[in-house]
Length: 352
Image 1 (spheres, helix red, strand yellow):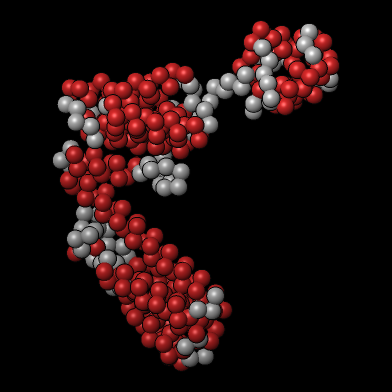
Image 2 (image 1 turned 180 degrees about the vertical axis):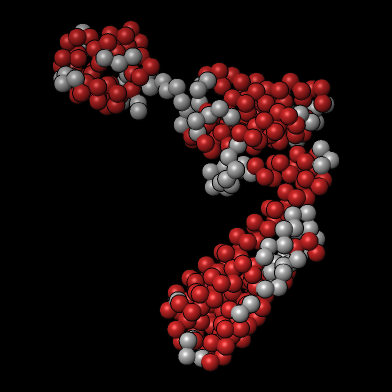
C-alpha cells in the first residue's frame, strides 16, 4: 500500500477530515488532498507528527515492510544469478547475505537464495578449499530452514541437507535428519523422499545389500500402486461406458504381472472385472478358472531378480475362502449363479 493510501485510509478510520489533518499539521487543505491523491508527498519534517496523528509507526506510514513480496524475491534472485554470471560467485553471495540481513525473518527469500546459490556453487570452478566457506554457509541456511513452520520449505531444506551430509560423508548427521523426516511421500508440497535418501546413503557407504532391499521394496510398492491405479482407471472407463478403453487398460494391467514378476493372479483381475460388467458367462468361467488356480499356486518371489532380497513368498491361498464367498454372495455375480459350471468350480475350490 502506497503512502497516499495509508494517509487516506487511516484518516478515515479515525474519523478525521482533511481540514482537521491540515490544521493539526499547519498546512493547507489542498496539500492534504494532494497527499491522498498521490500527486505530492508530505515534507520529511511532517512525517513524525503525521504518523502520531494517524496512530501508526513510520514504517507503516512509509510502507516499509519486513517481508518482500514473492515477485520482489523472484526479481532479486534473478539479479543474484546475473551478478554471479558477470562478477563471480563471491559477489553473488555478498549480495545475498546483505539482502538476508535486511529481511532476516523472510524464509521464502532465504529458501530461494539458498537453493539457487547451492546450485550455482556446484557449477562454479572454485577449488574445494575455496568452496568450503560458501558451502558451510549453505549448510547453515538449510539448517535454519529445516526448523521452518512451513512444511514445504522445511521438507525441501531437510531433503537438501541430508544430501549435503551424505556427500560430505557425515552419515550420522544425515541419518539423524532422516529419522526425523515423515515417512509419507508428498511430491506436491516438496521434493523430500525419505526412502530414496536412505538408499542413496546406503549406496555411498557401500551397503549394497541394504540399498537393494530398499530398492526392491520401493519397486514392489510402486508396481502395486500402479496396478491399483490401472484398476481404478478401468472402473472409470466402465463408468463412462467406454468398454473398449477399459479392455485396453486391462490388457496393460495384465502384462504388468508378467513384466514385473508378480503373481499370475494379477493377470486376471482386470479382465474378469470387464467380463463381469459385460455379463459374459463363458468368459467369466474361463478367467475364474485361471484366477483361482493362480491363487493356490505359490508366488515364488525368491526366484525373481526384482524381489529376491525381500522374498516373503506370500500365501495367497489364505484369501481363497473370502474370494469364494464374494463370488457366491455379491449381487454383481448373480448372473453366474444359475451356471452349473460355475457351481462346480466353486465346489471344487471349497473342497481344498
